[in-house]
Length: 397
Image (cartoon, rainbow, N blue to C red; front, top):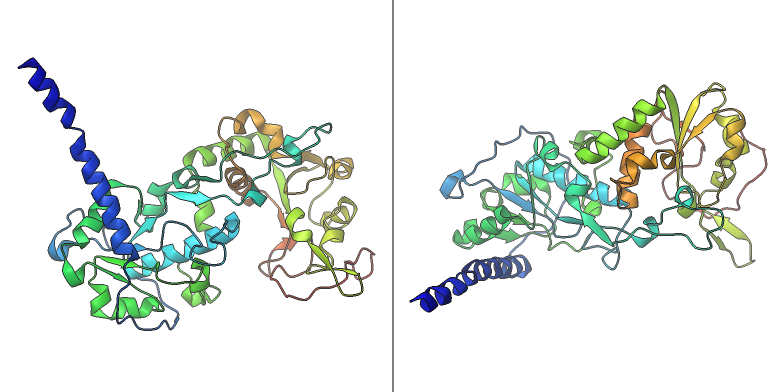
């Protein structure tokens, strides 16, 4: 009898394993099977609508409805082999969240975010002068909830992770609803999805049929009437441990000013057919050097102020000349706060971004809005106009 009880007990774990395997198989089958008769996309602007309360039962007309854009931000799209940087991925994520808010649906959030290797170097502030190579963070991706506080996001747009039991339940339920279960949509505006009954009544709308990168679907994202979530939304819902770290550093900084100096990746040059180096930002290299920064910001930041600098510059001691006028501070000065928390450059930038946004005076690299203070007058947007770099004071204000 004892042997029989042991044998039965050993078989019990098979059931949850089979259920999990079946759920994963169902997800793959449903979200990889194209739907027929899907109309073409026409992008239109939209207006905010009140958020629908989250429902708990998955039966009949009481169903909470879901929107799924895929398991990787910005994929499909041209970045599928690797991924874009945090800024581009946040543009895509904000786009998808806006659509979920507009459609009054729960957004199925990817459980991980891809980290572009180009943006995962530790940088000069974590490097001693005698190092011959630049260290990098480990990992090519990170958990989404290590970047963002999902409970805070859900106060505005309800979200579930795509590796959660709730998501598997949704997909399994959709199989029992027939035509009301799921549709793989391509080339549809969010207005059409909202207006047409065959889509508005669906349990699940799957956007992965689109070959475009996520942010490319937001053609009207610069139209004030089409924007439901401001740029500040995602920075404000950073994970709690990141918000706490930023607050501790801010308290130690006291009354401070700050600037973000983007150099590194953006200083790309290429030679024309005559061998002359050209760049898309002809004044940026000049405008972000210490001697030019000092002249630019003197009317905004008085001498003796604490100046917090966030930058991707790779040269050790690059900003040291500014110390003749300001008390310089970097995130590396607070390693005792950050080391237990930070695991990648995305998390580090999110902490730095919170610090920058709370400064008394914040100076950006580029002017993004008319009221912004900036180091350069070159446009941030890619003009596709390759020009010869300028290093003289001519035209410098």
